[in-house]
Image 1: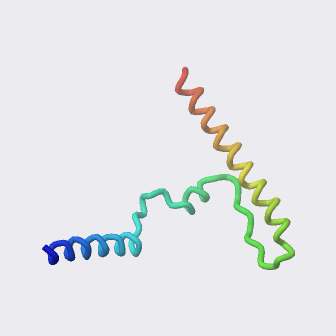
Image 2 (image 1 turned 30 degrees about the vertical axis):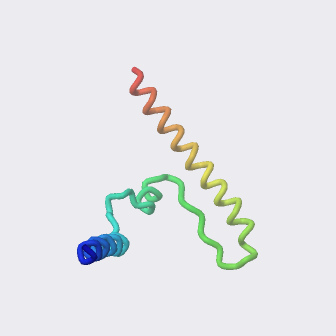
Length: 82
């Protein structure tokens, strides 16, 4: 009985390790979602003095992408309602 439970535990651990090492590429990669958008993401700052500017750029980026998605959703809703 101990051997069976040890084997089951080993199989579960092996599955989890393989899932971490080789993730599923069809799970909606974040980079492909960003590449499909018209808005370019802001560059990450190198110097600490650029952090404030990055914060405003990032807020603008998030708001622009949200408005783009809302426009696309409204267009889809309007086309499906007709």
